[in-house]
Image (cartoon, rainbow, N blue to C red; front, side, top):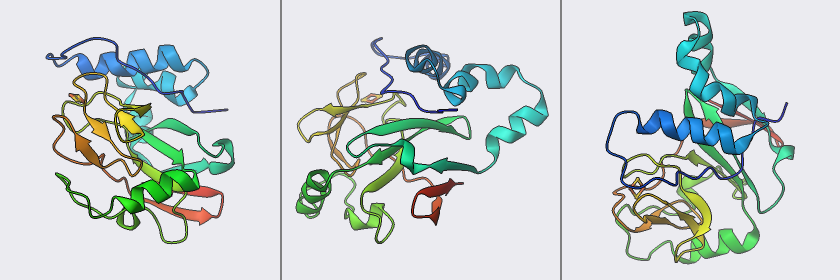
Length: 183
Ligand code: FES
């Protein structure tokens, strides 16, 4: 079952209440349609403890599902995670900016696994207030957060806007050239 969704967008402004995150998951599920995992986001808190514990477990993902230049959003520990299959142009742009002024400096190489620069796997929660950014927005050809305009580059490093940190890395390892285990 495909557990991916296409760039969920929160089209509300200025989230201020505690329900915002739940709303995002609901919106993501609605936009994403087919994703089992996406549907699980709004439901998981209603399930029994065993099911909830399952959401904390490591998950494996088949990377052959993600075409070059595309990304999927999956759920891990009830949080959205981007798995982006970067083009060479995206990698080159990120490396070129390694030493540009940044709020949260990091080289591109430090954000990917050695030998797997085409795969960027990061939290999909904006580090400002947690909205889910969309790709191909903003001035850096990376992600743009629709809530308050934070812009991330193709390494998901914060480049402009109110977000204080890069999109967080999540722990993962390659089980094979085409399969990762997250968590
Ligand atoms: S949540 Fe405010 S810029 Fe992303």
